[in-house]
Amino acid sequence: MTTEHTRNAQENAGHTRRRFLTATGGAALALGATGPAFAAAPAGKRVAVLGGGVAGLSVAQELAERGYAVTVYEYYDALGGKARSMPVPGTAAGGRADLPGEHGFRFFPGFYRNLPDTLRRIPFPGNANGVHDNLVSGTEALFARAGGRPDLHFPLRRATTPPAPGTLTLSWIRDQLLSVLDLGTRLPAHEAAYFVDRILVHLTSCDARREDEWEKTSWWDFLRAEEMSEEYRSLLAIGQTRNLVATRAEVASTRTVGRVIIEALLLWGLLGRGQDGDADIDRVLNAPTTEAWIDPWERHLRSLGVEFVLGTRVREVLYAGGRVTGVQVSARDGGQDRTVTADHYVSALPVEHARVTWGPALRAADPQLARCDALRTDWMTGVMFYLRTPTPVVHGHVNCLDSPWAVTAVGQAQFWAGRDFSRDYGDGSARDCLSAIISEWDKPGILYGKPARECTREEVVAELWAQLKDALNDSGKTTLTDADRLGWFMDPAVTGLGGPDPQNREQLMIHPTGTFYNRPTAHTRVPNFFLSGDFVRTDIDLASMEGANEAARAAANAVLDADNSGAERCAIAGLYRPPELEPLKRVDELRYRLGLPNTFDLG
Image (cartoon, rainbow, N blue to C red; front, side):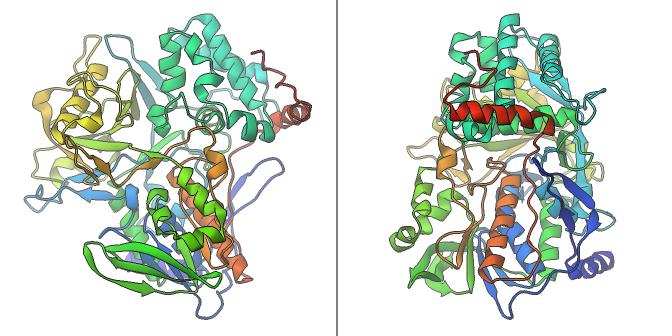
């Protein structure tokens, strides 16, 4: 630990933080004010946090800042969960670090506001705003088409002349969306107009209609995709769901897709509203995730007194007499079970791992735990390709719209200004890394005609490379060549490929219709048991790092409430709500209560 880092950690030991101010009808962020030091926790209060991913580390930070004694129990030998970097064993030479691997590339959209607040409070040498200053912006998104079709380059810049506050109108929104679709797609005019009108329906729908009607309606049905052209289905239905949230358009919740992807990410991002300060739409880290974020986070948490027990498997959360009495754990690779105890327990494991630790008695104590069995997960896993020459492709993310495996990618080294890839990693021969993610593991590919789950690891890599070339090597240009590819890395959590029982220990929660109703709250009916994870019910309603951080804040607040603590509660920023649309939503609320459709819903 450097002297400068030590000084930064000591300066942050007063646990000051920035405040969120909630405005009527929305949640506006005020990052200029610094609050007073937090009140200390009740003397000797101990918290056991189960899981050391973003959800677990976030709740550990919030509680440690308020004086709790926190111990984090993590399955792996490293912290960060799916967000962490993973060194590729045996690739280092000449004093360099191993090549950096990962579960999948990290993406920090501008509408994230809770997680960025946490990043600002993690000291980083030389950064006035801590880890947050390690975020850098992508300037363009590439929607790559196969078969020689023109690619769509989408500049990630805010509207040059956005409407002034208080003057946003539906006609302006409609004109802007139609302009984008007209310039960048081959959509028939009537299909573009219909899509935009459907967006206006969602924009003006009241909360009750969204939580009932649209949560029960798939994005596919909401857009009437079955009746439209292949271009419409690929670009506006499938491309906005499978590639971004790993959920098929045929089943994806309209409420989730409409609120997060269409409104928060695209529309309000382009208008610069509800963003993290002056953030751009697309942001990534300026170094491998563990270097830029997770390692500094661990150091900061240790400076706050947080303890970590790594390589630990959580077996069961023990319940008796109306309370959790302990947690049965063991070494990850076996060994005798032991019971750890604390005053409070926060389950911050991914939902597929958390729910198997809840026994019948605990589930009976709070029925929402049993409802978590209905939450669904799916595979969304990346492969990193290491290249001989710098190959940035585009200064942002790539969405391969026509790829059967719903492939997305980003050229990473171009964003790592403080790194020279060949100097710092591997044996010096790799100069770039293209990080790609497969979101569809159940459809046949173009090379072997098999779904990804049925392929061997080598076949998955070859197929993925072929689909990337199919999208990027057309229209007279060659972006990727076989000779340029040096090697690859896939998350070792994926096992058994090519065999009868392929497994993926690190899946992603998906969002089919009805998911909202089965998501639990951070507080439970068990007074000393709490939930923190991207499966917990939050305003963002999306399995993401922001969702994990928002849930962690809610869990920390629930712990404070259980102790009747006088400490300042964690502020939580919700998704942006444009005040100009609130009158239309109030009209829709009345129509909804009367059983009438939305004013703009013409079928």
